Length: 152
Image 1: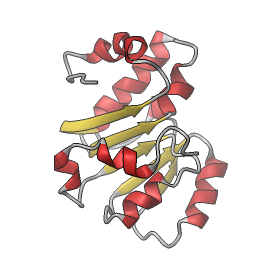
Image 2: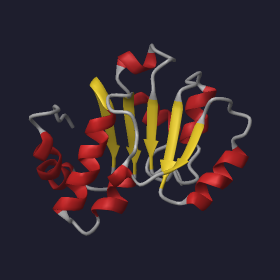
Image 3: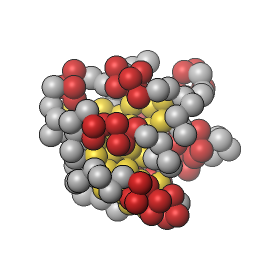
């Protein structure tokens, strides 16, 4: 679902170094049945990986997006990602935070953030789009502040 933001709004949040580099490695966490991945592909980004914990959703999206060569759809838990470290230029989280952090379980949130940090390249960007207000997110995001800068 795309009720948080439309694609154009998401796209405008991206840093300039992503806009100018169509070879950027992009990870979309908790992709669900969102159109964001295919829209990135349509915008010229060919290295887009979409993950979701639901294997059923992933299979449906693989079928629906078979016209997007190179786009990957993988059933994977964001709190336990098995991916090459330092791989992605951008991790886009459009609602995954809300699903993982709703219980405010600090260990679960920290596990997700560590996995995101682990797969981000040095200088990479994590874009968090959430229904949470910044004062509610910041205490968790700053747990890893020695390893990344937090802006809002």
